[in-house]
Every structure is written in structure tokens, then in C-alpha cells.
Image (cartoon, rainbow, N blue to C red; front, side, top):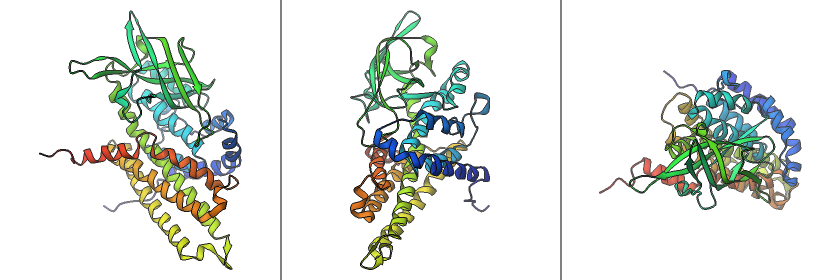
Length: 388
């Protein structure tokens, strides 16, 4: 049987729809929102109306029931124009809805998912802490059982979609005990905004994704009921890592979209800008940069789409998700860097979009697994440390 590299018709239609929205609705606003460091609830609502939330959630819970490849393509198209809006959609779908859908009980799914598939409400993923980034197991936020309730104390940082009047709540990893071998026991809770002792604050003065919401979460004697536990008590760390595996696909899609958008900006500029009486695209130094961009983007797209296909078909995708996130984010780095170089001094001015792409790319090599951590994950998977 021959391989078929054509996107399914429904995915092509989705891609075209999201691309048109990104070009006609997001692009005209992106520069102003970035400069003002302004999150747009109106734009978020419009993305919800377009169906960009609840991609992979079944229709019975208010979602669209679109496969993972369609979701990844949609995130790619958003990131091709604006990383901030792509981040809002990717974090909400992969990190917000994902844990509830995959690990929630029926009551939790029926309560939360329909509210979160419209764009009216957002949900956050509370994992990272001030002293627990790559070392996610270093979490100190804890929960202690008191009667029929759990009391949470601690804080989270760098949490996307965590603070706004329309943020419904967050999935929060806590330490709930210690095993006989001294290792921590982790449990995840669904904590709603408005719960006494739960406070969120928006973080400002960011270099990148300036029109997405990045937040700090604080828990001070925050009491939640037993039925706020997501999944099983003691399996929180496993739940979080599984969520990150899928989340890496969406961050890879952001890297791919960022690279594609930067390449298109550079190609357009190079074919319009003249120096020494020639269009600069005709200089071999620039032509080769653009050729290299095209090659790396194509390779990245094929790797990511395969990982999404494996995920959608219930196949093992963890390793390829790590490879895709690593490669796509670093391809974006190289492409954006060369694209800015082609723009020369103009690329350093906010008047040109490539300046925003240059800033937005940088987080892609840090969030949801730094490049260093991903290389560790991949090297472990191929048995580098299984020697002797």
C-alpha cells in the first residue's frame, strides 16, 4: 500500500478557514495588542465562535470532535500570524481541556467541558513553580486532608490563561504525601476561581507572547472538596507528564507556524528590497538562507504531522512528540534568525512583523520542556544510559 501525504479534505478546509481568520482578523490587531501588552477577550470569543476551542473533545461534551492532525494544523496557522493567539488556543486545548477530558470522571467532564469549548471561559494548567521548572518533581505546593476537604498551600508561576474574569479555574499539581522510599506523592485538583484562598495575578513586562495571559497562582489555606481530585489520588505526576506529551505537539505546531510565517515575511521582503541595483533575493547569500528555511520547514512539518497521526490513532507517540517539539522550536529559531538578518536593520524595528516573530520564538525552546530536557528524554528513550 502506498503512503498518502495528502491532508484529509476536512483538514484542508479547516486550514483554509483558520488561515483566512488569522490574516483578516488577527493580523490587523496583532501589532497593537503586542505593543499594549493587551489580552483581547473579544478576539478570544471570536476564536471560540470559529470553533478553535474544544478541537478534539467529542460533540457530546460541547467539542468539535476534530482529530489531532486538524488541531495541530489550526495551531500552526495561528502561529504563522501571531504567537500570542496561538498560545491561548494551544494552552487551553492541550493543557486546559486535555487533563479534564482524559482523566476526569463523568461528572467533571459534564460540569466543565461544555463551558470550556466555547471561548467564553478558559482553564489553566498549574504545574510550574518558582523553584520547580524543568524539575517538575520539585513542586512544593501541597495539599493536606482535613475531614472531607483538602487544604492547598503554595504557588504556581508562568501559567498561561490563569488570570482573567473569564478564567474558570486551573488543574493544580500538589504534594500530598511521601512514599516509603522517600519520593513525593502527587495529586492533581481542579480548583475554580472564586474558591476562598485562591488568587491569580497577571504577569506583565514579558518579552514574548505579550497579548496572551501569563499568570501567577497563589493558594493560601485554599479548601477544596474530595471530588475536586482529578484522576486518582497519588497519580498526579503521571497525569501531568501525559498531558505534556500531547502539549508538546501543540508547541511544535507553534514552532512550525512561527517558522513558516517568518520565512514568508523574509521571502516577500527579499523580493521587494533592492541593493546594488538588484533585488536582494538574487544574492546567493540570501537565496541560500531562504532555500535552507524551506528545507527545514518541510522536514519539521513531516515529523510533526506523523506524530499527530500516531497520537490520533492510539499509537506510541511520546518519543516523536519530544523530537517534534525539539526540532520545530529550533527550526523556528534558525529560520527567524535568518529572516531577521535578511531584513537587516529594518528587522529590528517594531514597524516590521519579523521583530515580533523574533521575540515570540524564544519561549518555544523553553516552555513545555526545554531543549535540554527534551534531549534528555530522547537520549533516555534510545537507551543511552542503559550501559554496564
